[in-house]
Length: 181
Image (cartoon, rainbow, N blue to C red; front, side, top):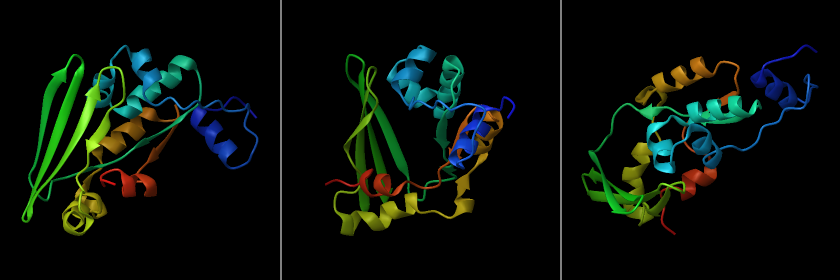
């Protein structure tokens, strides 16, 4: 087999066929891309498209890889307000407030220049009360999403690496990402 692209090499191996060489696809997700790009974690997460950070990292290390990209909702069904506040040296807290007809849902995320962000408060605190409103944010029809950023990423990645399109959330993330407890 002739020398093939990183994407084709990954797909060939996934199918159980023999590629030109064994693909090497390290799990570069946050720390290594930030180092390669010369940015802190806040810049990486809030300013650089994840697919782009991975593309530059895979090229830097001349390896294969995979990543995900997902569409964004075209609109919010209820007003959402996000406030970013500095809480210390290199640390910020983002508060998200979703205003619904039955009240508001709140969540908080901590951002740190040295570490990936993490949730410190989730939107769903009482499943019976909160889920009916939050559900409208995560379970949408295909035409309620803006797919332009997905198409841009797919076009720019080409065969550089395997970019998967994530629609919605994986099961574990879906259950645990925005629910307390």
